[in-house]
Length: 199
Image (cartoon, rainbow, N blue to C red; front, side):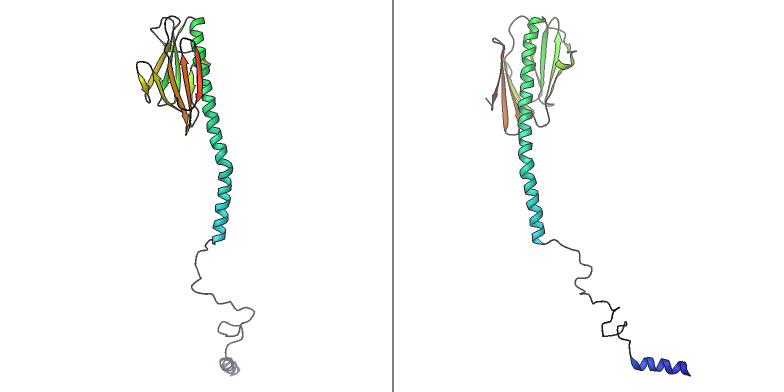
């Protein structure tokens, strides 16, 4: 009998404050959530996006000039390497009485050297330092101008350095982006000249 009276009193008294059915907030009640915001993915504010773009612009301002300077340095270095190789082959053909063939591969951006004792049968240069040159990344052989062939911008071209008889002159253009170097060889004076620009 007492059990039924307690249940009746509980039903008449209504929900306990702070309970699940109470309209009065209690210490254990949960705050109501806006159904429009529930489950919505977080976004970025305009100021956050602007801050990220500003940081990226600062990084590019620091890195890009160094990258451009590096390409110009590579171009200058490779032009000097090619000029040194041409001078050596020209002088060595006289002193060693050896025929040299310098091949320009304009597709792979490389130079290869072969030698011959009679000017007929050529073999790859055995000395590692003289086997050839592979241009650095970003530097390319733009074209080469050789008498009898004219301007060649693709494929392979070879010039000969012989201990007897006339040698071939040529003009080689090496580039990196908008920067250019012109390398010219004069077989009569043996001079190799490197100039800025495309001439």
